[in-house]
Amino acid sequence: MRLSRYFMPILKETPKEAEIVSHRLMLRTGMIRQQSQGIYSWLPLGKRVLDKVNAVIREEQNRAGAIELSMPTLQSADLWQESGRYEDYGKEMLRIRDRQDRPMLYGPTNEEMVTDIFRSYVKSYKSLPLNLYHIQLKFRDEIRPRFGTMRSREFLMKDAYSFDLTQAEAIHSYNKMFVAYLRTFDRLGLRAIPMRADTGPIGGNHSHEFIILADTGESEVFCHKSFVDFDIPPVDTDFDNVEGLQTIFDKWTSVYAATSEMHDEAAFAAIGEGDRLSARGIEVGHIFYFGTKYSEPMGAKVQGPDGKEHPVHMGSYGIGPTRLVPAIIEASHDENGIIWPESIAPFNAVVINMKPGDEACDSTCERLYAALQNAGKDVLYDDTDDRAGTKFATADLIGVPVQVIAGPRAVAAGEVELKDRKTGARETLTIEAAINKLT
Ligand code: ATP
Ligand code: MG
Ligand code: MG
Ligand code: MG
Image (cartoon, rainbow, N blue to C red; front, side):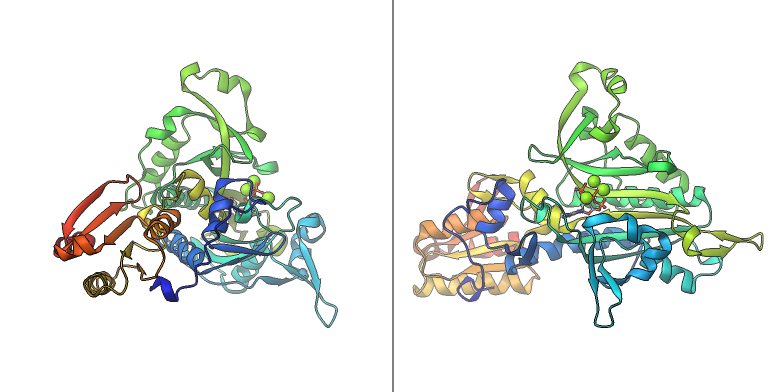
């Protein structure tokens, strides 16, 4: 992408309405634009990051055996009347009427709809386990939308739904998502801590919120410090190994971690003083086993090996991609701007032409730009007439991991300079060596 032809509306001033650093940086870099309260456009730079976050989520969902589909944003109220939630959901639900005066709603979640799909097709336990997910917009009329896309009214959610014959099998499905979430957040450069969450009347130990520690987080959290050192399950984890996954779950839930709603002062006090962590956190994911809560009233049943019909045991598993992007910025920035983890950076490298119009600089930059692109890298080429200082500031601000700086003096010697955005380390390499290093 040539910056001179790109659409990246960088703001010079720090927007006053933004209270937290991620919101400020997302507005300043032209990643997002508020269209009305709590409703955002994702401008090209932001869209790139969001797509990469979704790609990581998708890969890990697929690895864990979940299957992607796409359900609509608008739903008929009928389904929600069947489950009993149409009346219960309250003011967060945006209710709409179509021209025939039929009650519709903009989906805040999809349990009812996915249960309806399931019951229409699946009749036998032999089709189980099944886990269906999509990455789709949701709407919740939040009482206090704030912090940009961290808490917006329209937002993206990856929501997965599992179906099993028995509770024991449903727990295995739960563990698959638990492990997939540990891997997903790790690949996004985050240390997310699974914390026991309220399961309501169902009880048990099978609802966890995945929380990232951050001073600007809205939740108050309490946990043992040892989470920082726990190993992330490797890429070749066998998701069909029931005991293997249970062992990982047991390890990750063996020490204390709870949000304020679930906090147990006595259990927390039992932890040695030096190992206690009381902090603020951001909820980036939430997984939930809820048994037959929807399958029973909605008649989602399968025939078991005993020949009888059984309501299926279900779980749901959410991640908020449009919340994750600011959460990652909260965790990874400095006074000059964003520092993207490699896995989701909008561009892998930015080539900075220090003297556009200079034949040697131009041809060197074109060569670098082509070589990196041909190697499948996402490259931003700063070919603008901006001053050097502006170019450096922009490159730092948007947080691309590597800057390739081509100035007239270096280029005359057949060299360019590489700058690592995270460490600030610089090295001078021949053009050839720079291409080799980056491809
Ligand atoms: P919160 O406690 O922050 O209101 P929630 O518990 O209501 O979130 P869930 O129903 O568990 O949210 O939804 C799953 C995930 O969707 C959350 O963990 C979060 O990552 C994301 N999410 C929920 N509400 C919003 C929102 N208003 N804006 C952005 N992301 C959201
Ligand atoms: Mg909420
Ligand atoms: Mg919550
Ligand atoms: Mg939640």
